Amino acid sequence: MSSHRLVPESLALLTEGYAWLPDLLRAEDDTALTLRLLGHPALVVRGPDAVRFFYDERHVRRHGALPGPVVSTLFGHGAVHTLDGDAHRSRKSLFLPLLEADAVAGSAEHITAAWDEAVPGWRKQSDVVLFDAVGRVITRGVCRWAGVPLAEDEEEPLARDLLAMVDGFATPGARHWRARRARSRQEKRFGELVTEVRSGAVRAPADSVLERVCHHRDASGAELTPRVAAVELLNVVRPTVALSWFVVFAAHALHRWPGHGRRLRSGDAAFATAFAHEVRRFYPFAPFLGGRAVTDLTWENRKLPAGGLVLLDVYGQNHDERLWKDPYAFRPERFLERPPGRDVLIPQGGADARTGHRCPGEAMTVGILETLSQRLADLRHEVPAQDLAIPLNRIPTRPRSGMIIRLSATARS
Image 1: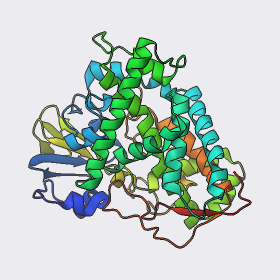
Image 2 (image 1 turned 60 degrees about the horizontal axis):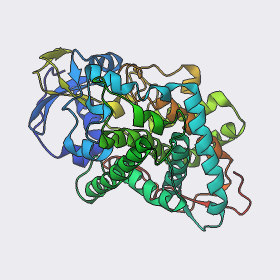
Image 3 (image 1 turned 90 degrees about the vertical axis):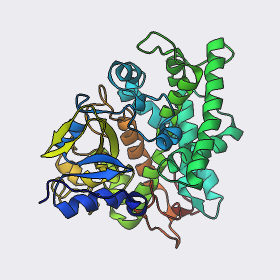
């Protein structure tokens, strides 16, 4: 077993996608290695202990670690994801209410209502591209829940832009530039909304996400600028709409393993939660997370100089046979046998969501995915012939067809 591996700078990430880091670690038969990425020394880590190491601010910082193209598409400049220390903790407090049970239930209720409103229209179509349709449903529901005003004719353009921001964050070319244009449009629109709320021209519902963002003050005591407030408002709405990927993966799983649908239809709440966890574990979304070494680091006898990159192999960890029995089998029952470990299942990051960089909307993700998976299982539909391949060299990936479904005239919602 080698303690140090140098991989020349290459296009391996672009060509191999999700399989890139897992393949490198598999070749080493290890949970860590060193390489060079874009000319910088990098340390790749995996495993629960590595998760805790990665999220320890004495070791790894996020500021300056995220590539500019990712910030310019997915998160936005000045976002909470780019901060550390007191600045991060102060900004993170804006998102902590998302962890509360009322927020989880409220968001799921609004999004489920939007789903039920959409289904009759789906019945009138010959085919429904589920990815696009769910994007519109979640956009409508999350905006209602967050207090963001949304006219009927604004729904589809906003959904399209929110999906584009996610779809283009990790790729060069047309998808990336589409994502940048989408972010520019929506930061301008949401910034104008923040200004109108602060001036009194628009009333934000009491205790809504919109109200909290507009009146939040950072560690310095200053209000967020309208642009940064828009960025953080989008950082509630945009990740929720990104659930479209997981909902489509849930539909894909129900098509491949239809027996799970019967159990979801039975109303088994524990199984619905286990199914949501397994969708998040099994299917690919984030390939890895990155940070920069605060000081010279040593991890499992690998050395990294200060300023070097630290990569946490998310996709590889969620499929690591050391952590999961039959990791490439879709088996929701594994989460009935044992609850997910905080630093073991990390599709949305690890460590503590209240104090660290783990996504504070993870509970909302699980709650909404539980509910919509049950709605999917209860929806009478066919899956016509189509390309359901999920290419691992596309980040973020999804079924090539977007998951086309065909509802019967008597479909139930």
